[in-house]
Amino acid sequence: MLKPLLFSCLSLVFLGFNEKKVNCQKKIYQLDKSYLKKSRVLGVFDLNLEHTVYNSNIQNIRDAFRGNANVPNVLQVKVKINEASCLLYLNAAFESRACIPAPNASLYVIGFKGGDGRDYLFNIEPFPNPELKGINSITLSIDGSYRSLGHASSLPIINKAELETLVRTISNFKGTIISSALSSALTKIIIITCETSRFKSVETDVYNMLRTSTPFDASTRYDMIKRWNTTLLGDNNF
Image 1 (cartoon, rainbow, N blue to C red):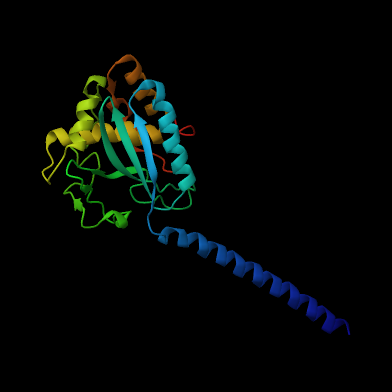
Image 2 (cartoon, helix red, strand yellow):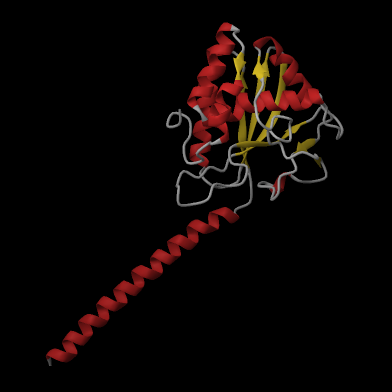
C-alpha cells in the first residue's frame, strides 16, 4: 500500500518539475521572440542645443532608451539650434543584461532626413531597422562609424559657434557623395546626441560647452567612448 502511494507522490513531484521546466523554457522563448519584432517609430524627441533645456532633453531620450529595452525600434531625434534643425534616426535597442549580446548599432544614429525629403541610411550590416528601407530611402556608402567618418583614432573639437552650420549641413544634404563637411557634421552631432545619452560625463562636457562657449575636445573622451560598456547608460555610466 505504501509503495503505490510513494510512487504516486514521486510522479506528482516529477510532473511538477517538468511543468516548471516547460514554463521556464516558454519564458525564455518568449523573451527571445522580442528580437524578432518589427521596428516601429517611438516618436520624435527634441534635442535643443540650448544649455537651459539640453540636459532635460537628453534625459528624455535616455529614458526612452531604457523603456524600449532590446527591441530594435527607431527613435527620431530632432536636433535644433536657433531656426535650424535636422532629423536623426537612432536605433533604440538597448540591452542592460551582460549575459546577452548587445544589439547591433545600439543607441546609435542609423540615418537622417535629407534636404530632399529622403531618408539617408548608413550602410550597416545587418541593418537593425529594416522597416526604414523603402522607395524613399537611400543607403549611403559609409556605415556611420567614427572610422568611416574619418576619425579612426581621435575625435574632433566641437565649438558652439559652428553648431548651426553643422545642423544645416545635415538637413540640406542631397545625393550620395559624402563630403568632408558632412562627415565632420555627422561626427560632431552624433557625439552631441548619442555619446551624451550613453555617458553622463560627455553630457556634462557638452552642457558646459553650450553654457560657456568653451570648445569641447572630444578626444579627451575617445578611449572611454571606444570602450563603451553597452550595459550601462547615462546616470549609471560616468
